[in-house]
Amino acid sequence: MSVREKVFEIIAEQAMLDVSDVTADSTLESLGIDSLGLVESIFAIEEEFDVSIPFNANEPDKSDFDISSVESIVAGIEGLVAAKS
Image 1: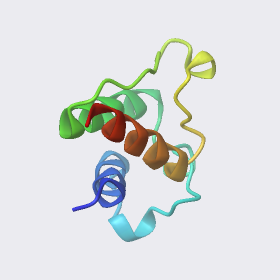
Image 2: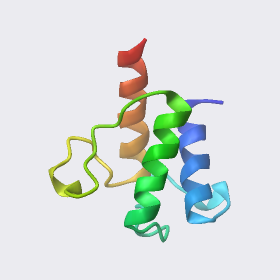
Image 3: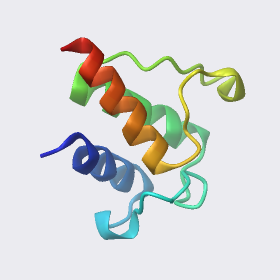
Image 4: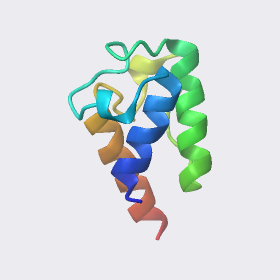
């Protein structure tokens, strides 16, 4: 399973949606993921890919990690996974 597919799966699970309901352009807000769901998604992604996401849940606007869309999250995770290799 690719990074993209796994991130989509994790986000869908957190939103309690089918993976087919998640698109690259989806925002977490549009999927119904609140701040707690965001934190849970981040933890699940970190655990799945054994990476540390530079994200501060207390100040998400000041984070270096772009969570504006599912596509930006995928790109960020792909970058972290590549840097780890």
